[in-house]
Length: 336
Image (cartoon, rainbow, N blue to C red; front, side, top):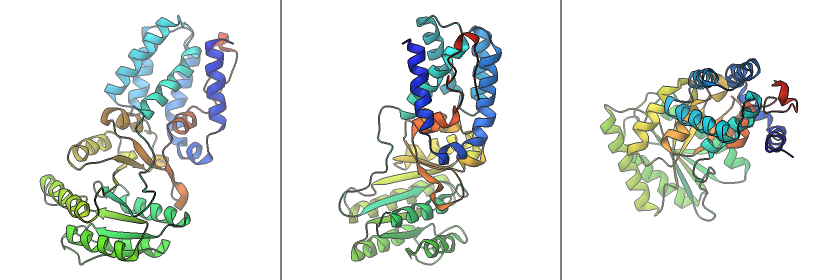
């Protein structure tokens, strides 16, 4: 069996295993981005510089990120040369595999760091409006479904209504919230929350934080203080510091991740609202440029639409029906 046929069959089998959550949640990106890729691969009869330039434009338009796209195109050029590929249809499954590789990175675990015994503390950071509180609520629901006891800490004491918003989520999922008054010291809230979590012997403590203070320096100082308080009370905690990003903001999300990631000890990323954007390629840009694992993705409004990120599911949901399903690659046909 040829290399290309093996690769196509491997990808086709993986595409069949894609869950409806990923397939439905990435529909907008698939329609916009993959539609253009399919059209390019079927329209072009040979691989030349014009083909690569057009593919480059499509990838950048899907917010995959200029630096990432340049590297990816260089790798595809090298593969085409090495394997003497002339037919664009034979390059498409290689593109899929390269994207999976970019998203998997250097093998850092994409799963949440949940402690096998004792309490797991997860801190959430990110600017206002990205879906941080909603993510906390949905994750609390998930942990409860798994039979874990959960407590929430209302550490965003600066944004009007933030404490109440977290309380609404707490009521919806049946989880208590540790809080103080608006404008109080977030680190003091965290201290109270940790003490209460210890007293109750809870499995998971989920901590909300402010998205904006008077300036960026103040915000980073506040997050550092929260880290110190938690670490002092529970050595090794927080076990995750997750930065929540709104995928619909594209390159702005990448800039936010760079600003926070440098200073706030971020261990992983959550990308929300992927179902609402045609620019889901930003996941690839953020993953590649920041070398931070994407841990969770928001693929819809329902409670169970917050999903563990899976690089293969992500790519094969995008390329479902396109990843070289046809054996008639000599004709350059793509089915989509």
